[in-house]
Image 1 (tube, chains in turn blue, green):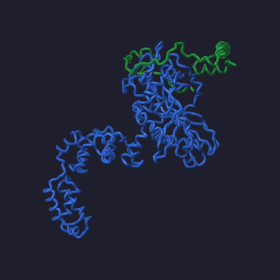
Image 2: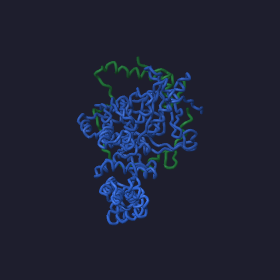
Image 3: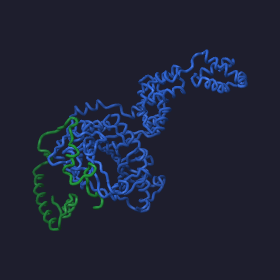
Image 4: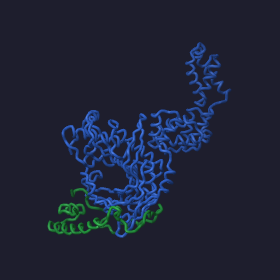
Length: 502
Length: 98
């Protein structure tokens, strides 16, 4: 294998203009496969979820999953697409053991949804419109395990083993039109598009769209053309780029690689490429077959899908608020910056904060606990925020106890620790651990007197006007009360007893 | 002008993983050319107002509810497989033929 020469990203952009095309496959969350009633449940025994239809046995007849079609229409509508009045499935013929039928049932020139767009928001708030070419229905392939080669790779394998549980699970393939005009922001636009699409799919409830589980997969097409020219260059297609970060890296890498090839007088070969997570590089795969080599023809075993306009409008009526619109609304309601909102989105905390606010917390407190203490603990434990064993209602209760002065922040963190450790609701943890703020003014007053007596020099400074020195006395009181005092109240008492205005 | 060339037949044979000898290519190219020519006559009589037929029945929207039905057992699913390993279909080396 030859080492690929690259030019720097900046140099590449000085001479060339990137054009991208993104193909995203979304595995739908239906209970059954696209064309048969086999379960789609994950983690089943190999080949325990197959039947004559998805195994491609002679004579077996497919019937399309109504929820699969409905989900495709919803995705199309959410992407501002037109919905076909009449469309067919097609056979995409190829020989590869991941499909026992020797063809994939897909759609060819009659996609169910076409001609749409998705507005995506970049980190600085700029909105970039990505045009959608089409969204069509198809089915997933089986899972191959390659045996006998190095580290499970297909190269050098002596044979392969096939599990067809996944073969036939509904997929929606969403294809963009060529994305032009992104310039140096191409990697960022690509990432933002896939991120927005994922949010949209989740909001529609048609799939969990978990990229790490392969429920959403992205192919990145990229070509360069000399700055100031119109004609597209030859593209490469980097397959299976399966995280948001990888999408950004793959685009960046291909820009640098194409630029190196082109600027040294070479030509780009139209081929598929493999992305490598370890170093963000791509390597050559197979030379891309021409589309006609798949010998698409209308699937004779499935009748056309002709969604009535009534059905389409009914589904349009069920669409949720678009994620970008919702985020902007929440950002304004919460009074925070684009950057803070982006952090909340990246942390997977939007819905948790919304639920905590609905449970009675104010938004600042909800944000503070989810993005502070809980995000930190989730990060340490390597788990997702939503998977933490604490509910938004429990966080709201902690926030309420802080708001009414029953807890200070330090105690609240201990309460959260207790809830996470399975000690019960916040009130139960407060009870069991004895975490109430010392609000008995008599006890507090005694502790303050004690601190003043023990730190006469500091007390004199404060009397002399050095109010800032009060912090040391507050610390002393907090120590004797083992953190269970309201620090603000302690400060008030100290200043009051020393006859100083706060 | 319909028709099919010997080269196109060779290409299709390769895509279909059919090994054809030289004389077979000539033979099938002639036959297929006749067949395509015969079928092409349909498009001479069918005007623009006649849509191509892919389904003989006037049916659309045949769908099933998203309800799980029993699958085959793995044993039954694998029963026709020439080779199996670890409850999976065993297939020969995939790369290496190109």
